Length: 81
Image (cartoon, rainbow, N blue to C red; front, side, top):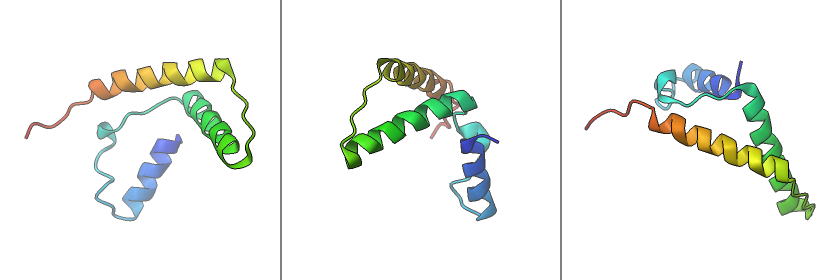
């Protein structure tokens, strides 16, 4: 189960209204979640421990994933008001 799916399941089990419908979310493959998690961990180490380790390949991957997320968001069916 992907992280987003488990978060949705947790919200749904608590009866949260934020757990609307999975079709209203952007899903990513586990490999992309791992890249984002790695970038977040490196950011935290830099912020809290002063360990700045800039990895160009990771930056490029995060930008690529960010662009893919942007495309997926644009394809979501937003309700008309």
